[in-house]
Image (cartoon, rainbow, N blue to C red; front, side):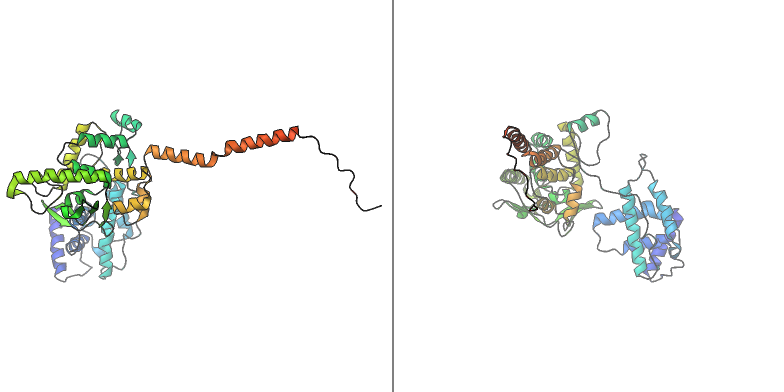
Length: 392
């Protein structure tokens, strides 16, 4: 879209806000700008995502079209073009990203239908290639060997028990060891970890309460409610993790004493060096650095969440408990995401199944052979004689 067209779209959005909603002259671009501007209750990252979809993908293809002339055929053709779009590095948009762009357009056009600007939503019946989220792939010895020999890195990867233990050993002297330990054991999201405050943690009862998360927005940190109602949760932690948190608290108090009044008074559990809130992106950069230094295969910070769920399932924790730990609203999401578990869990399940089916097979075979032997050794039974029919 040209700069002049963009300016016209902005003028149309302003006119729309003033009450001019004639669908005969209203462009899709103007409507999308107006729709985004009037979504006052969006979370910052959601707003950024919508804005990226609109400005990077929808405006260039649809912005100049008149809203009421938008048809399903036009929308379908546009998404063929969007799905072929490549990033500056030459990578095609993922199917999941194209699905999210379609969801943004569909939401904006649903609002246009409700406000009487469209008779129906031309994006409603659009079918796209399935954009299933990537499932966790375990870094088995073979997967690591393939990756080291130039193979592709999985989009979502989790460490084995031994690899996780190696990483925790590697970062044991880091000032944020408690954060990584808690992430591994509970699967807290990045924003939830940096949003924790000491009143949220009961070091006597062994609980962690998730009440908020921190996110970066326009160069500053904002405090938000958890991602969903299910994300506002209470977690129980083990005695070892409680010990780790107590040691972290003691070290933090020493740091605060050395910093004096500079220390942030809000009482965050995990902080930057001078006591201020820890930015999620900064934490991710630190984790990548530590991951590289450890020599372990690469995972993302968010993958520790997948790893925590996988390890819990490996330990025999029920799926419903894992769902509550992660803050998933639906157990279906938990089951679908974590159906791939550690290889040893699959092997143990196969062994248990085989044992259940075959545990008495040997005995049954032996009993069958014994009956056959008894039949061969038993003396012949006397013939009962002629059967009387009662007829003389």
